[in-house]
Image (tube, rainbow, N blue to C red; front, side, top):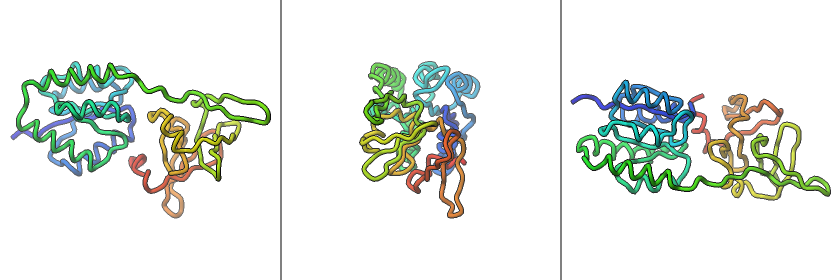
Length: 252
C-alpha cells in the first residue's frame, strides 16, 4: 500500500516544527512532504504534491487555512490548526474535519491520527460536503473581541496603553506588572483574567505568573540550571519559562 502523505501549514515556525516532530513520533509511516508558512505556499504544496492530509492553520497570511481548504482535492483530509476553542468545537463535531489546538498536545494529536487512519482506510463520499459546511460554520462565527488597550493609573491620571506596546505582563504580590519599552505600570487585574482577554496569536502564557508578547521576544536561552529564559529587545528584564510551558519553544 502506498504510504500516506501530508503537508503542514502554519505561519508559526515553532508550531510547524512541533507538529512535525510529534507526527514523526506518533505516526512514523506518514510522510510529511512539505511545510508552508503562509496560505499561498500551502496551496502550491497541495497542487504540486497532492497530499492525502493537509494540516492547515486557520489564520495565515496570504490565504487563510479555510480558503486553502476550499480549493483542496476531494480526497484530501483536512485538519485545522487553531488557537481558538470556539473554532474547533464545530469542526470536531462534524466527523469530516478534525482539529489541533495550539500548542500541540500529543494526546489530542493521537486522537486525530486515529481518526485520520480510519478515514483514509474507508473514504466517505459525503465528506467533501461536510467539510464545506464546517468551513462555512467557522467563517460565520464572530471573531473574538480581544483587548486593545490597557487602562493604568499613574498618580492622579488614567493612561491608555496599546496592548501591542506591552512586552509582558507579570504577577507580583497583589498587582500585575505591565512592562513596556519605556515604563513599568501596575494594575490590579489578575494574570488569569488578562490571559483570557488577549489575542493568543500574539500573547502566550509562559509561566503561571507571566504572559509575554511573542512579537517582542529577542531570544530564548538556557540558564546554568537548564531553565528556559526569555530575553526581549526593549528591556533588560527577563522572564523564566516554567517546565509546563516549555513545549511552546521546543523547536529551539
